[in-house]
Every structure is written in C-alpha cells, then in structure tokens.
Image (spheres, rainbow, N blue to C red):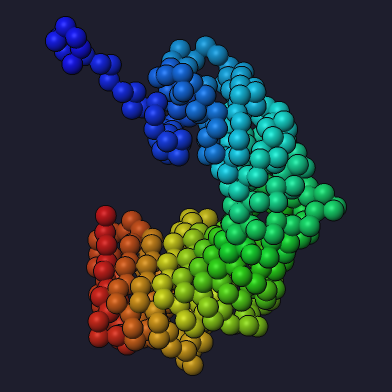
Length: 404
C-alpha cells in the first residue's frame, strides 16, 4: 500500500514475452509461416523468434497477394532472400513446394544453405516443366537426412557420393535420373524402410530399375521394372503398392517372361495394393496373379480394376488361361488374409475367377468389399448372385457389394 493509502494499478505481466523459447517455437511451428512472421510485432522479444524456427514450409501462401499483382516467381525470390538473410539456427525440417509456378527459380543458394544446417527432413517439389531443374549437388552432402522427397527435377549424385547413412524414407516423383543411379542411390541408404518411385514418363528413368534395400518395409511403385529381379534384395517388404499402368508396356508381346511365382516368396508381405489393373489384358493379369501367388502371408489385398474401351492395343486374356486360374492356386492357402477390396468390378471372367479363388482359399477372411463399375441393373444383379454362390473357406467372411 503506498503512503497516501490509495491503491495503484500495476501493469499486467508480459506473459507472452516471458514464455520459454521451446514453448514459443511450438506455437510458431503450428502456424503458417506468414502468420509466424507476423508475430514479430507482438513484442521486442518476439521480433526475431520466427528466425530460429527449426521447421519451415515455403509455398504459395507466402507470396500470393490479394490482388495478385506481383509475379509469383518474384514473390518467391523475395521470400527466399529474406529467409537466407534473417534465419539463424538449425533447421531440422524444410518443405519447399513451388510446383504451381510456371518456371523454376534458381534455388541453388537455398539448397546450399539447408545442406549446412543439419537438415533431417527435406521436401523439394518443383514445377513440372519440359526441362527439369537440375538440383544442386550440395543436397548430397546432407549427412543427417532421414526423410527426403524430390519431385520434378533432374538429379545426378556426384561420383564420390557415399550415400545417406541415416535415411529411412525416400520419395522420387517424376525425377530425371538413370536407372543405374537410382539403384546406386537406394543401395547407399542402408537404413531405408520406405520408398516411393513414381515414373510416369518413359524418359524419367531410363532402363529397368534394380533395388537393393534389405530393410525396406514399404514400397510404392509406378514405372518399369524386371519383375524377377526387383524383389530379390528387399526381403523384409511388408507393404507393396504397385501401379500396373506400365506392365503392359514391359510385357506386351513377350508375356511368357512373367513367371507363375517369383523365384523367392515375399514371405513378409502383409498388404498388396494394385492399381490401374486391366485384368482383361494378359500380361497385367499374369503379373497380378504372380504377385498374389508369391505372397502367402498376405493380410490385405486391394485391387483397383481399370476398364478401357479400346482393347485393340492389348493382348486379351485367353479363355483357357482364365479357366486355369483356380488350378494355379491349388497348393495355396491364405491363412492370414482378412480383408479384400476390389474396385470397378465389371463381372468379367478373370475378375470372377480371382474373387472365387480368394473366397475359397482364405479361411481367416473377415470382409470382402466389391465396388462395381457402372453397369446395367440386370448385369449387376447377376454378378451379385454369382458371387453369393461362391464357396467360402471362412464362415465369418462378409461380402459387401457396395454401389455408390
């Protein structure tokens, strides 16, 4: 109480400014970077807090203006300049997403800056252009990397590149690189557990890819490969997602090279997902059946059937080959298979034989979901009736015919 006996109001404590740095960092990392930068007006202590953030995302939300008068490329360049000038401290995670720019600005200084900051998680998504941007070689000096995503760029590891010793996740999406360098890059990542290879164009990766990754558990693949070799050095694989769009390009006219089973069974594989599966095409069907037969311990199968009107380009499955499908599974039982999902079912003979086999050979099956493609009601009812009469090895198997 002051001498005059009157109460005085004290200014409230600056709680925001006195928060621990670790708490402030957690708050800022949960904000879009633009909003995090704006917090610099809160107080003197907050003025430079965003400059030490260890996790950052640079995307169009930073330079997009209300009136869109500024060129996106210029806006991005200004942002990068301020970032390189003001940011201090270690950066553990950095996401660069400029896929929607018309041209790719120079980012060499940015990549070099990140390579000197012990980056552990790096995502670089560049614009899709006719001439892909060549990524700066300094990216291959990021010895602390654990997660790496590269999209729409040209990469050439230097001759002295010894690999990413700590990398556990790698995603290469429409990158331009030789198949030999892809194989070398993967084999020099001894801890790799998750791999995504998306090769939509034949000139993205030249030649068939050979993979050596003994600890790989999850593999998502779009592209060309040698089916008999690609699984030789990934024995721990548990989750496989394969887009079959390129299978027909590999094997059309030479379907006899597709084996009935792989040389070595995929004993660890638990989940198999096949998309763009044209089951009426001989090589695609043979490819899918080979993977299923080679995976005795599957717990889940998901197949997205692709139905095309133009079948002139494809080698249609012979009727006798379809009739032989059940016999090719005669010595198999899927004792662990619990869930099957098949989308865009048209009721073709190949589809029905596959469904029949899976129901008959899966004593632990709990649920089979079938989503038909658009067809006449009469044909749809016929398909349902036929599937309903298929024998089931599991008394608990529920077949759900889902029409959206």
